[in-house]
Length: 97
View: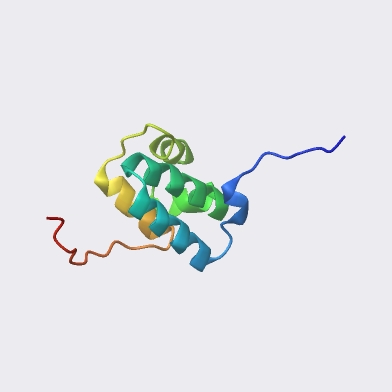
């Protein structure tokens, strides 16, 4: 009998380019909740303790902010994205009319 293991996306988020592509894909095709969960996967991959220290948050607060159905404040999202090595960029979009 073949054993299977549980898939964990965090196991594959090991390079800045992969992390960036992952977060951008979620941002383009998901909803705000999906982005929060994706950020949680990246934080787990990079080390939750290290990310907590960079944001000035406790690990517990960070876990709570990045869990499914969480509604963290924009300030928290911004701090976590910076701690993950990302940034927010605004660019003009074509009208959707």
